[in-house]
Image (tube, rainbow, N blue to C red; front, side, top):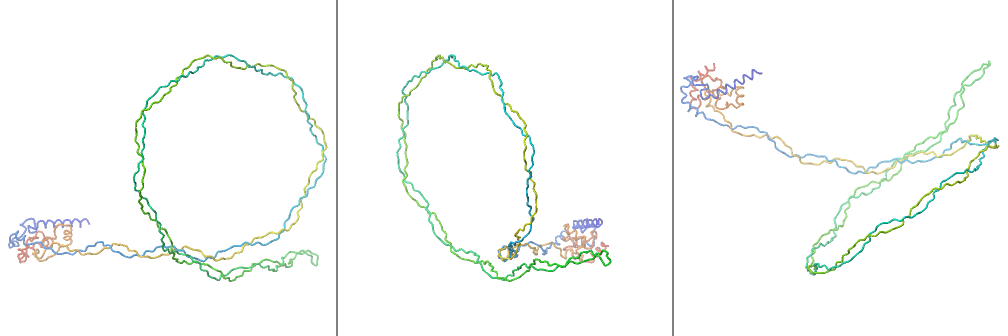
Length: 490
């Protein structure tokens, strides 16, 4: 892979160099072009101008995005109320009486007399005299003289005239005309048509199978059980043999189911549309302009001089010495001898005979028959109509904008070379590496595809890319050009 990349790079370089030196007959200088081939070419500048650039219209396909609209179906989920008839189980509780036997205990209490001796305490209270000394307080009230100083006030009143200025208001009432704008509400009664959906009950009669039954008392015979019985055979030896007991009759309650048909009234509701006229009131505010006289007051102030008497009070204080008697209490203790009685209690035990009754309880069980109510439940089905919310899908069409790729042909002008630029007459476009060099933008798509590097005559064959173009075309077609080209290709 590396060798192929190197070869491609070398070929592209050689092609670029050959195009760059196209003005030198396909080589780096004019000495490489044989004289017999280039003798009849003429001036190089005239041959260069004779080989002009040609253009052709090339169509290319371009893909561009174009919006378009399609209709798509969208499914919406809608909920609706559907009346459904359902059966509901109604359970009823009944009671039946049943007798049962209980054993009830009966308690009897008997008493036995018993004589016993007990010791009973007897309490007596006595008093004894006790002498003791106590101290009692004796209170006496005494008085002492206390001197203190007091201040007595002496009041003196003086008066004098004071002048002051006051502002006296003078008010005057005037009137002005004011236009007021008020709003008046006008009411207008109108009616509108309202369509309402009303549920109307529809009663139907259905036949329903009702399952019921009743209890029956049935009796059947149960064979007796087999027991071992001891006996004596003819020889007098004890033996054991199996003996079956006589059968017994057993009564039991059996539920007998029944099925009957009943006519049941079922009610379902149907939606009806009702149209009615509903009155409503429209209120409008209408502006009303009124004129009225509004009073207002104008106040003016005038200054006046006035006089008033101001009275002042002066107080002077004088000190005086006053004497008063202050009471106080004195306490002295006095000792006295008193006699008091102190109680005390004595206890003596006395014997006493007492008769006691000792209880004895006995229990006996008695049988008693009672009646109780045993509940049992019966079930019956009742038809009801319920409103069930169900969801259903409703289709609708909506417009959706999508993008798509549209093929469009675009025409543009590209430069090409005609047969005048091919002196050798082969007109080949070149091989793989030539096309690679053209794509890389080295300019090999111009007139250099005549007898250049891509026509089979190498860069050093004496027939350059631009040599023999235009006016030199007949010279390239002569036998003198074919031999050098063949020699150069060899």
